[in-house]
Length: 295
Image 1 (cartoon, rainbow, N blue to C red):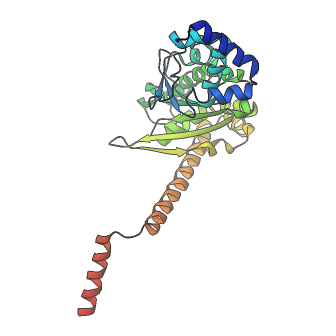
Image 2: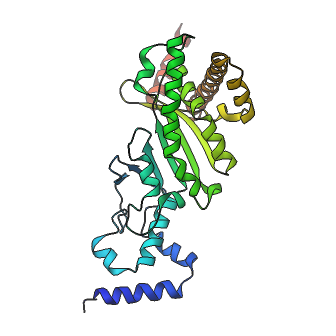
């Protein structure tokens, strides 16, 4: 006999009242994506990458499913969804802040209070490429304008401080630029915000993503740029020697690049040593041995 919506609602109410939250979360784990990456589009829609495969395809807590569970269960499902997945947002999105402080799923669940892993993709403003980074009045003016640009990104991320579990939250800043001075400038402009997050208990990582010709991507972790104590940044900025400070940041980025490139080369060499030779390579070696013996 077919079940009515009232039967489902009665079951979900008893499930909520009888089971402790820890058990309910284990059940929810079978309904929401776990550790999947979701891209937040400019219109606040959330699309998974890759496509979700589990029974509940959040974020559409609507329609038939929503009619069959209580509002409390819907809210807990949404909380779980935000807590166990990765959310990718682009800093240029006009709705960046709205994702964090809006109830997009209609469950009275505010994402900023529950997200535990976000990736923010950052690009320099278009006018940054008008000139290089030499100490000219024009470039100094560009730096000032960029302060407003990056300040706006940080303001859009302010709702993150509303999270209930900052120590469980990882914020990744991914700078999608190739030129070292542009990357260094973005990291410097967001330094105050990064240190505020760390002081509040968040884990923060900084990356550079380089897209090579043909679409290949290479990531470099640049979190080491923020190993300096916060006061050192303030001293450098207050000293008036802005470009000397920028040079230090660029030098640090180059060092981190070189360290990771060397590590990758060693890993590739180790893989080659650990990989047994193919039959063709063995035959080639045998041929060389014979030639030597004949000679």
